[in-house]
Length: 588
Ligand SMILES: NC(=O)C1=CN([C@@H]2O[C@H](COP(=O)(O)OP(=O)(O)OC[C@H]3O[C@@H](n4cnc5c(N)ncnc54)[C@H](OP(=O)(O)O)[C@@H]3O)[C@@H](O)[C@H]2O)C=CC1
Ligand SMILES: O=C1O[C@H](COP(=O)(O)O)[C@@H](O)[C@H](O)[C@H]1O
Image 1 (cartoon, rainbow, N blue to C red):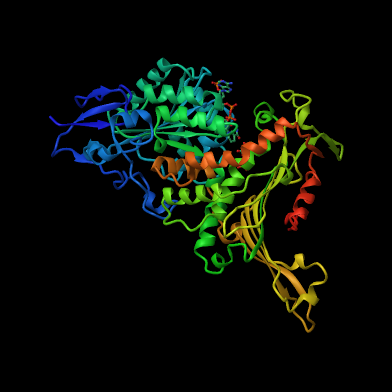
Image 2: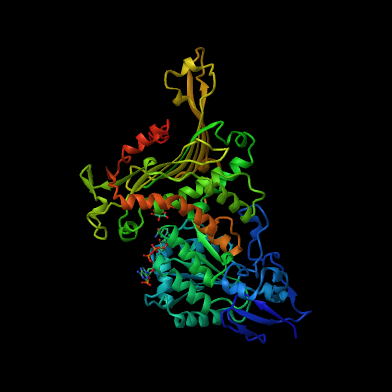
């Protein structure tokens, strides 16, 4: 009998086949006739809704890829050489394909992110019929809990955009019936074996696909990946792992983490999440640029004077001070969320919308960036402030933050891309906590109109008359373009107006949460919105020397009051590059 290698298993056996385990690989009997060969990207197993309609790259979505895990991990390479890949497909019957099941395990289920984002997103996907017919959700954490207690916990926090919809309660009950809990240690292979037993029990011999969401602190990522991959991988079907940030603290620790993860998983089993890539407006950035003739020709140093990536929150690090103090705003927001948006904004046109083509272009632009210099960065930290009889704590008032902490809660930076398209254009980033507003946006400031015929009508400040394109990522999603026009009447007075695509006016339905899109993509095997290891490497390579310098030189942050617009240093930084921040007023 001919045999085939499957890359998914640890040492698990399916009762329905004579399967012999070889490390993580299972030798499957080839039964020509009743079994069919599964190509690398076969039409995906149909779930309750047509996923094709929701593909985030506009292509029919990939199949349940039974090839996941074939490349990348040393273990995979040990058994399947790339040149042999064609021959290493697993043989799975049509019936099995149709009877596949999906098990999603949320590791760290007792935590903040799981309650706030992951369970609500899963419920929203279920409500909207985007999960397969046969799926279940497992919570895993150290906290002792029964299934019922997990369900109670989830139901209390299951506030999501679906709340006001029809049948929400019935749907919630049905969803909760599919939720189970298993308590265990994060470094115990035995506990993950027990989880595997429970998963097998529910999967009842079907072709099972398993998704692990690591919603845990980063110091335990590797333990969990080891235990899950060795003891709870799917023996038939794919196993994928979503990893939450932070992916390391610097270039070296990130590489170390990648090496460790790749010891147990292939790169294409690892889904490094950056939830900003799942936000509607960030998704729309490429559409706006590449599908509108009016924008694409302007997308270069010839017409763009500066690009600004702005993130602000009107609350501090309350409750997360312990985590935050070890990272700071540059690692928390700039190195990932803002840099990812920058890469999407500035990349060259990809060959296609396929994940690898898009990610290749992002890596290229990240690697073309000029080393970030301390003189192009300012850092700040919020201090306590009283306003209207209410007092707001300073960053170091948090019990979990050292009193003498120099960790920045605000930073502004000017970055440059050394390529022909962007040479000399400042990409200004600004990110801060405890500011006057919550907002995330991309601002594109265009150059002055050469020889402007209406120069006289603008007054002395020509900057005020330049076009600006704003993508407001949140809140109140919008894309607006500031233009100059004539005030109606007999005179010739010019005005600044906005061509405004306000999402809530144009599209009255709610916008899905970023976690919904990303979870759905991970289930579908669509990797475009997840970070590849070389992208991560390039991102850390850019920021690590700066972070080290800030720490070595013990740069003291500029203090700013809680609820203010942040340190004035940010304005000097912009002025040094001959531009102004576009968000100077609330209605800008
Ligand atoms: N919360 C958020 O808004 C965001 C979080 N993230 C990232 O997502 C991940 C999860 O975040 P969040 O839910 O806030 O994290 P939590 O601190 O709430 O931790 C999640 C769970 O992990 C377990 N845990 C916590 N600390 C430890 C520890 N030192 N050792 C072992 N287990 C521990 C706890 O479960 P138990 O004790 O039951 O085992 C806890 O419920 C983190 O990597 C975080 O950086 C990313 C973006 C936003
Ligand atoms: O990753 C993070 O993001 C949140 C902000 O996310 P948003 O979707 O609410 O804008 C931020 O508060 C947190 O510090 C950071 O770790």
